Length: 395
Image (cartoon, rainbow, N blue to C red; front, side, top):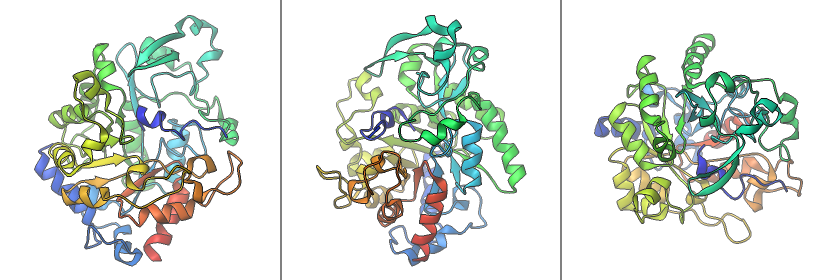
């Protein structure tokens, strides 16, 4: 998930033809449920089956998306994390957040800064690569993928990003290398054959305006690889996402894949809007007018969960907004982010105790969000999500 996800307050706590593709996702929203707005578990139960039709209509509703794989249990954006997400029942794996190398390859990292997700700090030969850059207006110090060749990055190994919350994940530090996007596309085919079912992925273009200024445009590279592997069609098992609407608009001209605009907090502005002098905020994008505009070039939105159900000053959930209804009215699906099991990442009224790595009442939280009618959700814990969906659709 994108850069705005990185600045989400709880993230680092240690206490195609548009009309045709829009119709395709509209059908996916309906699925076998019979109603876009069927909120009762029994009404949506049929959506958890797998209809015979291909494409997005073959996905269960609500869809369980493995956020950076199974990042609740393994260092994120590694094949260990991706494969475990499939083992745990994820319908789609977010493989991965795409950033470029100096020599133009796309690799999977949460951010271009890799000091927190790899062992680069232990490599003395790269000590002089540590630098400070302004990334989407934020001064950031560390090591950046665009300053390394792919061969150099392949000498690094992944580590747990939030060890204070997930000390058990540090057991796997150093086990996996950084995957490339092309390796992910091959892995997707291998896993599809191995598992006897279609494996879906949900890559994201990261900081596309920043990288385009460096001469490392992401969208053309993504499109080239998807075309090479025959995965650039409307029924291809690859959904593309970005926090920058202009990146999705660019992809819309290059590929026919389903496209999703990610949305951070209501008061924020997409960075491409900042660069272009567009004064609109996310609050403007989630109005009926804004959603209609998005529906002209994308098929879904990925809002932060707070846009679906806001929290009060104490961090407790309040009343759902009309976002689900308004998005469905213009044919957009909703895949909000991110459900995590640990206390600091849950609404206050679903926490248990105060330990930062203890689990709260995540099933209660899932049930509350599912009841809004969302079409799926990103989660670090796919197994929990699958069980929560079963409770919901059979309840």
